[in-house]
Amino acid sequence: MNKKKTKKTEEKNTRRKINIKLTFVLLFLFGILLIFSTYAWFSTNLNVKIKTFNMVVTKNSGLTISFDAINFDTSVEISSNMLVNELKRTYPNNLSQWAANGLIPVSSVGITNPNSYFFDMYYSGGGVLYSNRNREKGYIRTTLTEENQIKQFNRYIAFDLFFRNETGSPIDDNLYFDPATLFTFDEDAGEEMKGLLNSIRVGIVKVGSMPLDANPTEIQNMKCNNNCRSVIYEPFSENHESLSIERAKKYDVDLKDGEDFPTHACIKAGGPIYMGNTVSGSPNLNSEYFRLQNTMKERDLDIPIFTLPDGITKTRVYLWIEGQDIDSLETDSEGAELSISLNFVKDTAGYTDLPE
Image (tube, rainbow, N blue to C red):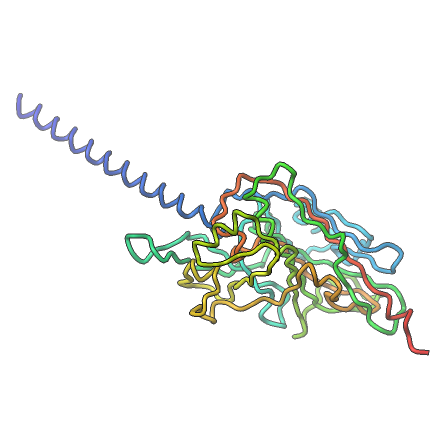
């Protein structure tokens, strides 16, 4: 009888020890998850949802825009339902990407192959790794995304956009971002979100052009012909919130509001890419992982994005949060809604300033 009680007691103590060990393991893992979420690269609770997204071109300029090269107008509204569902009716081969769960930081330098009009978009889903028990010198490993199908739940937004330029000009017109282009969070957004707004990026790839009377299907399926080029617009590259400035000091970065700080974005999948170097651009940074992007700043709005001939031009547009940007460092967002208005304007030099 005593032997049975003793055995039961031993079994109970063993189970208790196992439960205690499991509790410590779970607490340890939870602690690691908290560490992961302190970097914008890996935070899944950013909750940057798109409230409104529209695009506008100047009226009465002979310029209109479309998502399918069929239905053109001077303004369009962009939404998940439009890109993921409705667009398939008129543009079945489209490869639109939407961020239904919110924008999650990725990294890109645009296109690295002139024969491809897809941005190289890198993400990290494995969290911060460490080479020792003290959790020093955290590093990441990245993966290159694939855009081989329509995705409603991606980390960024991407879609094809067609410009119809109908002026009869023998000289190509210049296309610009209009100063009315806006990116705004709700008024009640906290400081975390205001800093994250400075990491917003817009990228555009120019694919090619066809005559105004070209078949829409041929226009939709237009390829690069080894002549694509991309540009990335960083609207707030010189804006830095006080919270970002304070956090940058931990990496020996003297960040100043009003001054541009270069983004060293990913150009290769894999790793290790050490967290300190991802934000500081230190001299010992391995150049095969990073390079400066081909970018436009807010002060560059008088520089053309690219030229538009008389005809229909195919482009691809990207919107994302740059995870390598200094202002997304250690962001832990409470969430906010983002409103976007991309406005385009063209010059008329092609047909008003012709030589006599």
